[in-house]
Image (cartoon, rainbow, N blue to C red; front, side, top):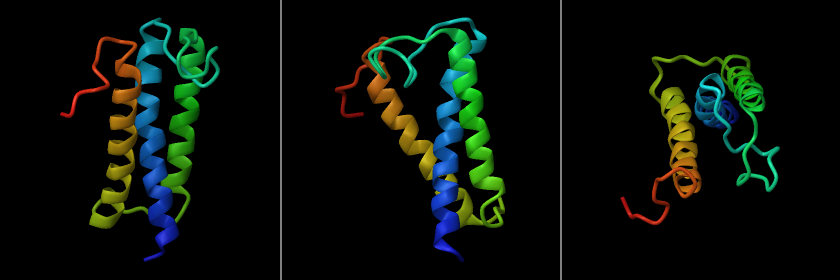
Length: 109
């Protein structure tokens, strides 16, 4: 098992999970934070920018999972690496953006 492949699957999971809120907000026609907003991560970007950013994240996630190593969804270490990346970026995003969208960033749950 090549550890570099597991790192790639971890980041692939993070990119795929990060795509979800951007694509959903964009397709719904809503503005949402992107790295391109002013100030970055706090200001809002248009729905079109969010769709493009979400699509970019899906593409990078796909490339990291499908073209690095030999990803097998039935191999526990592959899925755990992918899932851990997705989980950690999801928790980070929930805490970061919760303060802007009605969630609480300071709860211990």
